[in-house]
Length: 140
Image (tube, rainbow, N blue to C red; front, side, top):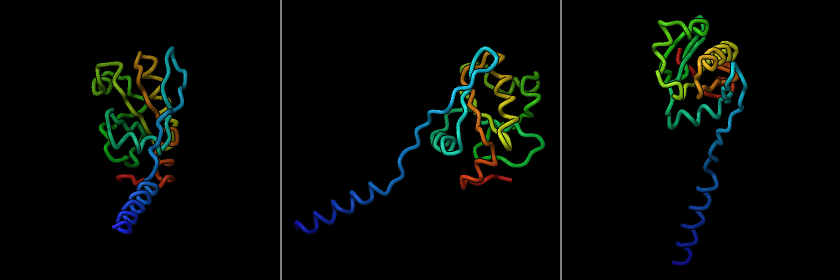
Protein backbone atom coordinates (compact mmCIF):
# COMPACT_ATOMS: atom_id res chain seq x y z
CA UNK A 1 0.00 0.00 0.00
CA UNK A 2 2.84 2.40 0.86
CA UNK A 3 4.49 1.64 -2.48
CA UNK A 4 1.24 2.38 -4.35
CA UNK A 5 0.81 5.65 -2.47
CA UNK A 6 4.41 6.59 -3.18
CA UNK A 7 3.98 5.88 -6.92
CA UNK A 8 0.74 7.84 -6.99
CA UNK A 9 2.34 10.87 -5.33
CA UNK A 10 5.46 10.64 -7.48
CA UNK A 11 3.31 10.55 -10.64
CA UNK A 12 1.28 13.54 -9.44
CA UNK A 13 4.39 15.63 -8.75
CA UNK A 14 5.98 14.61 -12.04
CA UNK A 15 2.89 15.59 -14.05
CA UNK A 16 2.56 18.85 -12.14
CA UNK A 17 6.20 19.74 -12.78
CA UNK A 18 5.88 18.98 -16.50
CA UNK A 19 2.98 21.35 -17.08
CA UNK A 20 3.90 24.62 -18.79
CA UNK A 21 4.12 27.65 -16.59
CA UNK A 22 1.44 30.25 -17.25
CA UNK A 23 2.58 33.17 -19.37
CA UNK A 24 2.49 36.47 -17.52
CA UNK A 25 0.88 39.10 -19.71
CA UNK A 26 2.58 42.29 -18.77
CA UNK A 27 3.03 43.92 -22.14
CA UNK A 28 4.93 47.14 -22.71
CA UNK A 29 3.14 50.50 -22.53
CA UNK A 30 3.81 52.86 -25.43
CA UNK A 31 2.83 56.54 -25.21
CA UNK A 32 0.92 57.82 -28.21
CA UNK A 33 -1.39 60.71 -29.03
CA UNK A 34 -2.17 61.76 -25.47
CA UNK A 35 -2.67 58.19 -24.26
CA UNK A 36 -1.00 54.81 -24.55
CA UNK A 37 -1.35 51.35 -26.04
CA UNK A 38 0.25 48.10 -24.94
CA UNK A 39 2.64 46.00 -27.02
CA UNK A 40 2.55 42.24 -26.52
CA UNK A 41 4.44 39.31 -27.99
CA UNK A 42 3.20 36.10 -29.60
CA UNK A 43 3.35 34.06 -26.39
CA UNK A 44 1.34 36.67 -24.50
CA UNK A 45 -1.26 36.82 -27.29
CA UNK A 46 -1.53 33.03 -27.36
CA UNK A 47 -2.23 33.04 -23.61
CA UNK A 48 -4.83 35.82 -24.03
CA UNK A 49 -6.60 33.88 -26.78
CA UNK A 50 -7.24 31.00 -24.38
CA UNK A 51 -9.65 33.23 -22.42
CA UNK A 52 -10.51 35.73 -25.16
CA UNK A 53 -12.12 38.87 -23.79
CA UNK A 54 -11.30 41.34 -26.56
CA UNK A 55 -12.08 42.34 -30.12
CA UNK A 56 -9.33 40.90 -32.33
CA UNK A 57 -8.57 42.92 -35.48
CA UNK A 58 -6.31 42.17 -38.45
CA UNK A 59 -5.31 45.53 -39.97
CA UNK A 60 -2.90 44.24 -42.62
CA UNK A 61 -3.36 45.14 -46.26
CA UNK A 62 -3.37 43.32 -48.55
CA UNK A 63 -4.82 40.25 -46.84
CA UNK A 64 -2.14 37.63 -46.08
CA UNK A 65 -4.00 35.41 -43.61
CA UNK A 66 -5.48 35.54 -40.13
CA UNK A 67 -4.62 34.37 -36.68
CA UNK A 68 -7.42 32.09 -35.43
CA UNK A 69 -10.31 33.83 -33.65
CA UNK A 70 -9.89 37.09 -35.57
CA UNK A 71 -13.10 39.12 -35.33
CA UNK A 72 -12.54 41.83 -37.93
CA UNK A 73 -10.36 42.75 -40.90
CA UNK A 74 -9.98 46.52 -41.18
CA UNK A 75 -7.34 48.28 -43.31
CA UNK A 76 -4.90 50.01 -40.94
CA UNK A 77 -5.04 53.30 -42.85
CA UNK A 78 -8.86 53.40 -42.73
CA UNK A 79 -9.50 52.23 -39.16
CA UNK A 80 -10.72 55.67 -38.06
CA UNK A 81 -12.95 56.15 -41.10
CA UNK A 82 -16.71 56.08 -40.47
CA UNK A 83 -17.25 52.82 -42.38
CA UNK A 84 -14.78 50.94 -40.18
CA UNK A 85 -14.87 52.83 -36.88
CA UNK A 86 -18.53 51.84 -36.56
CA UNK A 87 -17.46 48.15 -36.55
CA UNK A 88 -15.38 48.68 -33.41
CA UNK A 89 -16.91 48.79 -29.92
CA UNK A 90 -18.52 52.14 -29.10
CA UNK A 91 -17.06 51.84 -25.59
CA UNK A 92 -13.62 53.50 -25.78
CA UNK A 93 -12.53 51.37 -22.80
CA UNK A 94 -13.19 48.06 -24.58
CA UNK A 95 -10.13 45.87 -25.09
CA UNK A 96 -9.04 45.76 -28.73
CA UNK A 97 -6.05 43.73 -29.95
CA UNK A 98 -4.54 44.68 -33.32
CA UNK A 99 -2.12 42.82 -35.56
CA UNK A 100 -0.72 42.89 -39.08
CA UNK A 101 2.05 41.05 -40.92
CA UNK A 102 5.09 42.63 -39.23
CA UNK A 103 3.70 44.94 -36.55
CA UNK A 104 4.15 48.29 -38.30
CA UNK A 105 0.62 48.72 -39.68
CA UNK A 106 -0.95 47.66 -36.38
CA UNK A 107 1.29 50.16 -34.57
CA UNK A 108 -0.04 52.94 -36.81
CA UNK A 109 -3.63 51.78 -36.24
CA UNK A 110 -3.03 51.65 -32.46
CA UNK A 111 -1.74 55.22 -32.48
CA UNK A 112 -4.81 56.39 -34.44
CA UNK A 113 -7.24 54.71 -32.02
CA UNK A 114 -5.42 56.10 -28.98
CA UNK A 115 -5.61 59.58 -30.49
CA UNK A 116 -9.40 59.13 -30.64
CA UNK A 117 -9.50 58.37 -26.92
CA UNK A 118 -9.45 54.55 -26.90
CA UNK A 119 -7.83 53.42 -23.64
CA UNK A 120 -7.37 49.65 -23.92
CA UNK A 121 -5.55 49.05 -27.21
CA UNK A 122 -3.06 46.18 -27.58
CA UNK A 123 -0.62 45.59 -30.44
CA UNK A 124 1.13 42.36 -31.49
CA UNK A 125 4.65 43.74 -31.93
CA UNK A 126 6.06 41.28 -34.45
CA UNK A 127 2.75 40.60 -36.15
CA UNK A 128 2.04 37.39 -38.02
CA UNK A 129 5.76 36.96 -38.70
CA UNK A 130 6.54 36.66 -34.97
CA UNK A 131 3.40 34.55 -34.48
CA UNK A 132 4.59 31.99 -37.06
CA UNK A 133 8.19 32.07 -35.79
CA UNK A 134 6.86 31.16 -32.33
CA UNK A 135 5.31 28.04 -33.89
CA UNK A 136 1.67 29.15 -34.04
CA UNK A 137 -0.39 28.63 -37.22
CA UNK A 138 -2.06 31.10 -39.53
CA UNK A 139 -5.34 30.66 -41.35
CA UNK A 140 -4.85 31.40 -45.04
